[in-house]
Length: 215
Ligand code: C5P
Image (tube, rainbow, N blue to C red):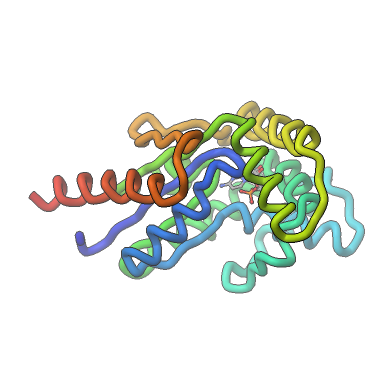
């Protein structure tokens, strides 16, 4: 492996990018940052004290105080927080503060794996490896649905699909840092792959890039 390795992974909700990021980080012994949690943490902090989600000044102030070491996935992973996160994520001053913290994370130590929506395009444009992980909205909605049911929850597939499409629309069409593949990203469509095949496709790509760099 090269001295430093930064892997940038982007893609829409429920594409499988988070699982891939965790698996790659474990494989290479690198720290992992799920940058979605940073936007969720801002939204959660505002919701918790009953502050409005549409004040950019307030949201930006909260964003500058987010501690990357204290992001609690269990608390932040609710549907309500995800929706609210995609609203504060359109605000440029929120993005500026969070991107700064995310870059510091990527630049420290021997590298990192970051996943989100703008990692290859904005946060780490010089990442060694960029992956763009996607799947059809129907497949992503089915995965989310099965995940909720397997945890004993209840949910309507049609509602989840509508949520996913609404979130894609907001993330792909915002003015600042819209979700899109970086020009040099390697695309992995997981619509017809299980996680094991997706991991092997990702690993193969990372290995081919890192061995070409070392040669
Ligand atoms: O990935 P996750 O669902 O946790 O992200 C929540 C929201 O945070 C996304 O819908 C998106 O609006 C925003 N986000 C972003 N840029 C990132 C990561 C997440 O705008 N790098």
